[in-house]
Image (spheres, helix red, strand yellow):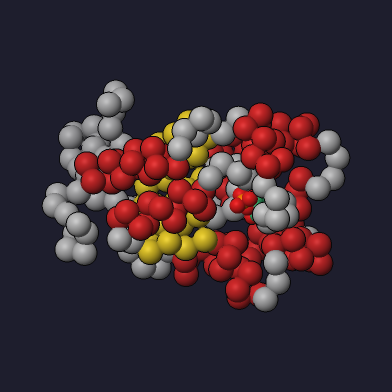
Length: 196
Ligand code: S3P
């Protein structure tokens, strides 16, 4: 285990995490990890992009195209409190959610934030292989390699605010889920009733 465990404070008191928010770049695996983690914990999974698509009746790409990025960011800000209203929720927002001023600071204090770190090479490789996946409006213009590198560099300090960082290059979803689950269970006095 690392020097300081995220589920214990400096005095050794445990943290009873009630919510998880997964941060990280496009194609870092947030949605997949969130879905599997929620299932493992018996918690609810909310995917913010999907919530926004459901509420507006438009795809993320259509919103970007029609109303622009700032309109999409406003929708993220509007839908986040509702998405996190219930305890025992795992939220997977889009990769640019972290750029919304104030959203990270407004998270409930019992929220474990996890940065799923991914290298530009792995992002490009995953995007290359994802046929029929969602269109990423921020990567459609210009050279994808420099776009991913620049965007990732501009966001790294924001993602680094997360409670924990997990390097996801060459790691399976199951391994990542186990690592986050261990952190949550370590801070928990006893298993919750609906958990096995
Ligand atoms: C975005 C990431 C996307 C989606 C939108 C903007 C971003 O979500 O919210 O295209 O700014 O990084 P994923 O991270 O799930 O691809």
